[in-house]
Image (cartoon, rainbow, N blue to C red):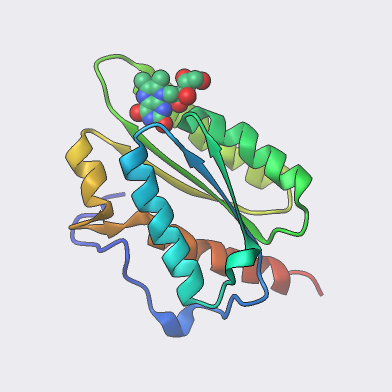
Length: 165
Ligand code: DLZ
C-alpha cells in the first residue's frame, strides 16, 4: 500500500468523466483541522476542475474521524439525489491504541456503508504516523489525497450511473 514516489494529485484528465450533472456530499472531520481543510480544498478543486458546479456540493462537519460514519450514513439517507459522498479525516498515531481503534472503526464503517447503501462513499482518511506525513499528503510534497478522492468520487458516480440501464 506504499505511496512512495506517487503524487496523490496526479491524474489523467482525459480519463475522468465530465461531472457537470453530478452532485456530491463532503463530510469533513474537524480533528487535525489544518490537514482536513487541505484535503477538502484538494477534493473541491478536483471536482470543480472536472465540471462540478458549486451549488451541487453539500458540506457537513463532524468533530472527529470516528463520526464520519454516522454523518455519511445520514447523508446517504437524507439526500438520495447525491451521486457520491467523500469522507474526509486525518488520524495521527499517538501513544495509545486509540489510533488503531479509530482507523479500523472508520475504515470498516465506511466499507459497511458502501455495502449497505447505493450512494458510494469515498475513503479520504489519512492514517499517518506523524504530522509531517499528513502535511506531505494533504497538499505537500506527496500531493493531496483530497484530489485523489475527488477524482475517485467522479469515477464512482459515473460507474453508478452506467450500472443503471
Ligand atoms: C480521540 C481522537 C484521537 C486521540 N485522535 C484523533 C485523530 O487523530 N483524528 C481524528 O479524526 N479523531 C481523533 N480522535 C477523535 C475521534 O475520532 C472521535 O471524535 C472521538 O473519539 C469521539 O467519538
